[in-house]
Length: 402
Image (cartoon, rainbow, N blue to C red; front, side, top):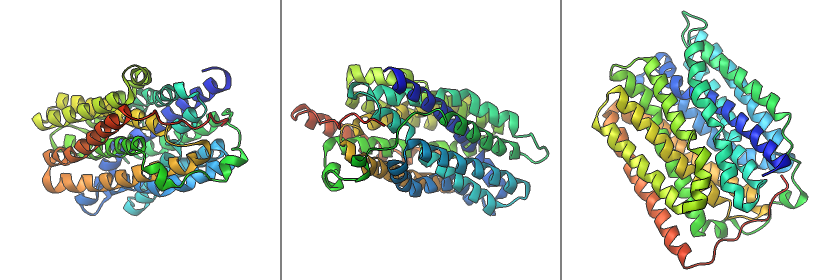
């Protein structure tokens, strides 16, 4: 990968790191802030869940917006909304407003919705043989978040003491602003007329491909499993006698697991095949569940959440890479939008229900609940692998200029 494509991937990786740093602040603290503001403990994770709900409802408009006006315009708009959401959340914490905190979190979901297309922007600009690596390299920007995000949360949460956590949400606005500055250097042209027509095959025909089904199952169910467990983890850690600093540390190790493998995931897919890597991801998530069920010591939270991150990485990078083989240039906006909408629709449900399941049935129930999701994803991958052995390789869409 050379020239403009390499520069774009670098910028997108840095923006991914800044977005995920903001997201890690939310992951570590939104449940704790929600618990302090909500009228009942059962609503503690509602603010964080609204992020995924807004993400799901924004993914389709975001994709169509970028198909018409270009990636850079959409990315900047998302970062602006995310920064505004951080400011609203800060205001809400100062004024003890649960409704305001929910609104701020919901606006940050727009940032998340748009940021999900960073990896697609990199993949669509790369040669077919390099797409899995382009996706992985962008996601590798999350390693920055593993260090920066929890550190920002830890340093800024008491910035306005005795008002806890307000500074951390103001820091989200700063991170979004830095993203906007970087995006000014992104060199992705406005889409060609052929892409703006949104033509190609009917979506139903595309969705019947075994590759599409396996890609969707791994992306959706892997992400849902990760979110369901991760959302409840800070609450579970604190309820087991660990403090908020421990919860931030657990999320840090989780982020390391999510993004550090990205430096090699693309190469692993090239060597072993996408199906094996996705199956390995499902297996790692199963081991995460077993570790979580074995006890609640701090090291068990650390290990489980690290495994949760690595397993998600394998399933997510594998699913994204496989998805890019299922559509043509003129089909990519609607296929990517459908994938993101379904992913975050299910993830929103997982996030909303996580706090309730934990509040009503406890930490073990949270872990048992994800087992059917992992079984379904693994079954879809095995079916795809079986079918693909006896069928021609799926056609890839022509290389995009954007």
